[in-house]
Length: 108
Image (cartoon, one colour):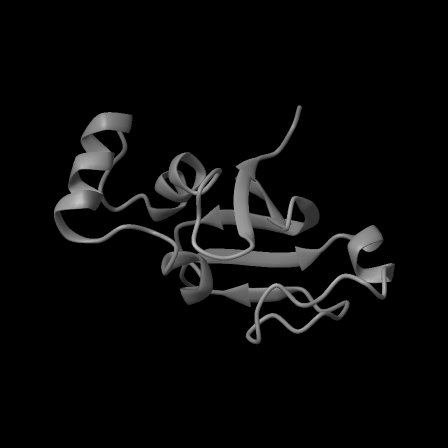
């Protein structure tokens, strides 16, 4: 199992979990959920207590990844399997993303 912290405007919004390469889930953090000032991270993830589940990496997060030659280059640079989208997301979505969302490894 691997987990990533999902931030919206540098505020912890929720946790993205990979149980296996065919089992993913996203859940909002209680503090973020309780704050009326904090918005949905996406239209596909309305802010509620639901645990969102998928058989593949959610398209919202997958679309944060590079494609083609850039993806291959990043995989070589970070020594990540090209099919490991979750691992690539962890390495490439921590800074300078397009939009308000960043994804970072969970603090220990």
